[in-house]
Length: 467
Image (cartoon, rainbow, N blue to C red; front, side, top):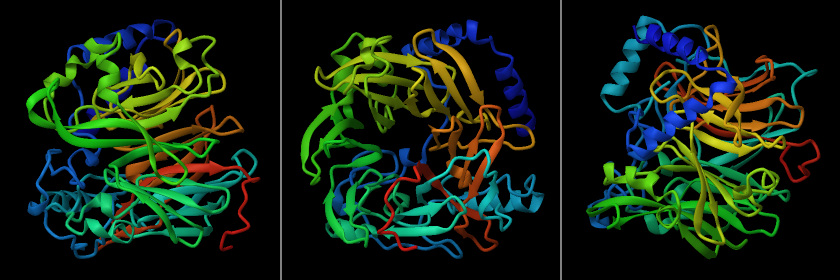
């Protein structure tokens, strides 16, 4: 019944107005935000997992009440972020579905997507796929990997949570302490890694720690040409303008220098309350506590779109609010929100400006069972392209997920919960696909999450890599 409903939803989506009429969809979505309504149930599991400052309800918890980090491993399942993998050998069998429900009922899965033994590169059309190297973080390990187009691992970095943050031994073991949410690779082999909700670590090519930052880093980061690091951070505390009695997670755009020292921190709540978009954030008062906005993307703009939309001037930041189903632009210098848009997406990730002045965004789809990648014109608000998989090759991740335009015009998509990354042409053909070979569970039915697959050019220096 649920699968039938999902496909009816897909048919309804495909029957929505053509690009010329899509503005109505965006307008309707804005009304949802302004009314404080939400069509999403749940969200990223990071919403409810503990961190250095929050408990399972996303509220502050006294340090003395936190149990000692034990690195608890369940039978057949090591620490990390694992989901039940679908789409590798057809539909789930009844036996597999029963096993999934059993695992979920006893807390073995904090989310969900059964592996059939397929792993590595499963599709590679060398004539149409892009070239280069693939850099990614995986839920099975606190580190990052550099991989060739054929799936061969060229180099690996690893740093356990307590190696980076030994003073945090009182933090409960959870998904965020067992893997890196995101990473960034420098040309000399140094890497940055985010322990979600905790902090940032920088390693050299041999995984030696260069420095750490414990300011509540989460979800996303960007490194500028001058060495500065823009990163999302958060703090659990009371914010009277939301609610005087409850604790919320307040998100910040934080700027670090190349040595990990904090230069500036900009409250995302404040930049909206002090802008023309303050009424949009009245929806926050409906939430009152916990992770009220769930900011999940940060992109520093290059100004290429500024001639059409002045709000997108160079140096401003494009961000995404999963809980509000909206994306926005923040003027870093003025510390003010200057653009806001909701659209026909639910719980979205990774909005990014394209060279053609369009925006690409990953529409997770909430609980619909259908994810999509959308390209739209932010000036006319018209949808110009979409990829939503097919009945034979379903495409869905309730949490995480990324999209990126490649030099050859194809789109690289990360279907996170299914541990899958793939490259698709504008015609919707998959020309490269990778499924995470990191498996767990008594029947190897679990697959490690891939948070983001980044394609690096062939010219990227790799002399330091362990070929």
